[in-house]
Length: 193
Ligand code: GTP
Ligand code: MG
Image (cartoon, rainbow, N blue to C red; front, side, top):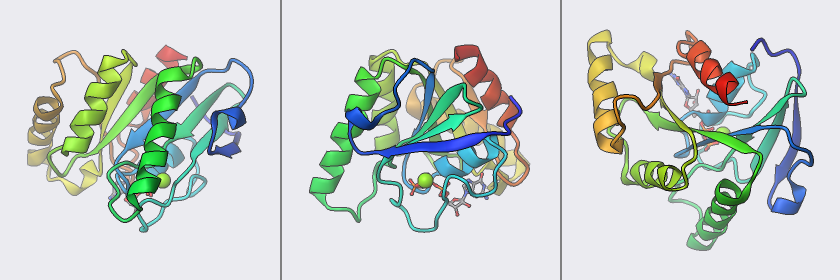
């Protein structure tokens, strides 16, 4: 999809604030700093519409971006961020869980993992969770531009093995500077929406 029109509809902290209507939603989940906002910006052709930061844990609400008046991208607070209090973490956790398990408009989830490292225990927990709830999931390995070409296949394999992906499970390696992987991610989204 070529995107010309995007609007941040709401930064929600509770379900009552989620957009009304039946348009499909795609959620973006992953550790803080993994590149959720960056991927969102590349998909919508904007430089910094979804705010990126060097300050992890900055996104603390469910941000609903209305894309081409057709669907919503939902930027979910990053998990595994140690600096927020335990209480805060629990609050986010409950909000994310309620959204992922109860939101009828949710069509699929894009889970981002850092392609430079082995997926963390939190990544594995999240993937198993999405699988348990049978949410269609696309795994995206971010920051793949930081890998040497010779490391790419290895990284892919490590992600597959650590998360327990089947051979058929969709996995896209993404690089923001070159936008590598953008079309593949869009194809997956369009198939679901
Ligand atoms: P939170 O909102 O804190 O959960 O973080 P986030 O997941 O939205 O991460 P964000 O998009 O803000 O990116 C974090 C940092 O990683 C920024 O400095 C980005 O520029 C950088 N980054 C994200 N994706 C890529 C990528 O594909 N390649 C490179 N080289 N850097 C990236
Ligand atoms: Mg963000």
